[in-house]
Each structure stands twice: as C-alpha cells, then as structure tokens.
Length: 349
Image (cartoon, rainbow, N blue to C red; front, top):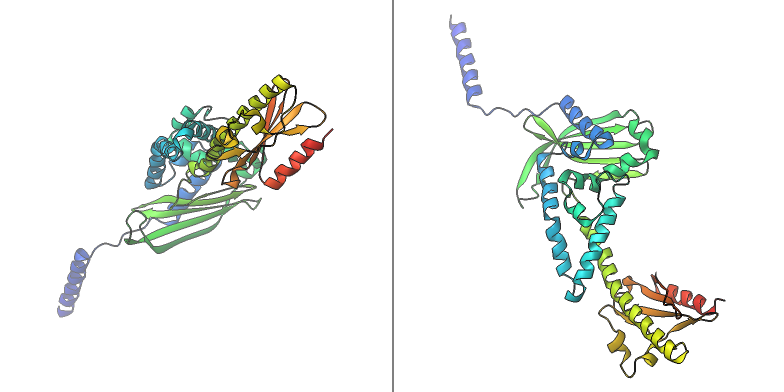
C-alpha cells in the first residue's frame, strides 16, 4: 500500500510540474519544409508573378509592396538632385531608362510595359518578378529543358541561428531555419531557405543557377532598387543632352557662316561676332572645343564637346553636312578614342 501511495505521489508531482512548465514550441517538420521549398521552386520555374510572390514570407512581400509604393516618390527625389535647368530632361531620360530596363526584363512583353505610366501601375508581384528575372528565365527557349527536368532534392537541413533584427537595431533573436537544395541532370541548382513561423515555414531566401541565368533573393536586401543602377545612366544621358544642344547650336552657327562666306569655319570663335566661346558654348557639364574639324573630300564638319570635370560622361562629336545640316552624334569613352576618331575623320577620302 505504501509503495502505491509513493508512486501516486510521484505521478501527481510530475503532472503538476508539466502543468506549470511552459510548453516547448514545436517547429514544423522536414516534410513541411520540403513542401514549402518545392512550392517556391515550381512557382519560379513555371508559375505566374503572383504565384511566385505569394510563396514569399508575408514580411518579405511587405518590403516589396513598400518599395513599389515609394517608386514615384523616389523618382521625384532623384530628379530634385539635378540642377534645376536639367531636371525636366533628366526626368525624361530616367523614365525612358526605366521603361527600357523593364522591357529587357520582360522579353515576351507579358506585362505590357510600354511607357512610364505602365511602370508605375505594376503590382508588387509584377515588380518582384521583373527584379528577380522570372520572366527572362521562362522566356528563354534554351532553358526550357532545364526548367522541365526533374529536380532532385539533394540536401535538407534544419538549424538554429542567433541574429540581429534588421529593423530593430541591437535586438537579437534565436530563429529556426530550414534549407532545401535541388539539382537537376544538367547540374543546375536551387537552394531555398525558410524560417520557422509558428507551425509553418516561410521562404526568406533562395539562390538559383540555371544555365547562364542566375538569381538571388536575400532576406536582408529583397529588392535591388532599379533606380540605383539607372540613375547613373539617366543622369549621364541628361547631362549629355546639354552637350548635344550645345553642339547643335554650334552646327547652326557654322552653317550660317558658311552660307554667308562659302568657307567652312576653322574655329567656332570665328562665327561668334565678338562673343566669347565660353559665353556662347560653355555649359554646366560640357564645353565645346574651338576647332571645327573638316572631312577633306566633302563639305562635312565635326564639332567636339568635352566634359568640364567628369570624364566618365565621355566626349561627344557631332558630324554634320554643311549643305543640308544632316547630323549624327557619336560618343567616345576616352580622349584617346576621340582623337583616333577625329584623325580618321580628317584623313578619310
């Protein structure tokens, strides 16, 4: 009887301890991890932008949505960095660069981006698909067999990691991660990383290499701002437009001089009636050379725009006919390249 009482007391104590101890959180298992990773894989290879986007963790989607919402505002901010006299041209060039970039990322034109307003109307899912290159991957006929091949699971791991919260500096958390790796017979690879969220897995990262196509979605930098890479291009184009305007005006001056004298001017300053070259053709970013180059076998000239400070803008040359004003503009990355082109122009027959 005493033994039974002792056993019963022990059982009651264990029951009491269990009732008052916090329950251990149960992370989702490996099979659930594989299912989540496979869903991302299939959406990337063959799904729509919405299907791919919906496979991402909710907070990852929120970051893309925030980026998508702020895009027009960012465009305005970038425009305001430019000198006031260049803003309108800069905005136009930046919008053009954005449209061209989106067209490159959508080879089959599925999203119908033709003008800047179409870019602004893109959904967060569509913007993300363009950013990650999903439509380029699916449009590439050379990659069709690779996408359709059987993807074998070759790695699976569940682990914990201590990390600092990105949006709360100094706060660290312990998270449970799951990683699944896939390879096909072409030795293409896809690795999907998930984080445990209650009883589910959420996709926070993937890396894919399929033929000559590759993509990375990182949980710390989900969307690479397209304006970051396009800003420099658009800014250079806007600044170059100043040079093109200056060269166009100089061409007109040369043609007026030629119409009055029947002689091609050797110097721009010869056409200015006492106005200095700097006052007539000195810009914020470019200035024109005084010399007017001439092709020996025909009435054809060339005017050069040189960068005032930033050599990365390049050197511009406007080639033109004195008779009808037909012109074309070429840009050269270095002064050496420019001089070779001018030498060819002056000696060609």
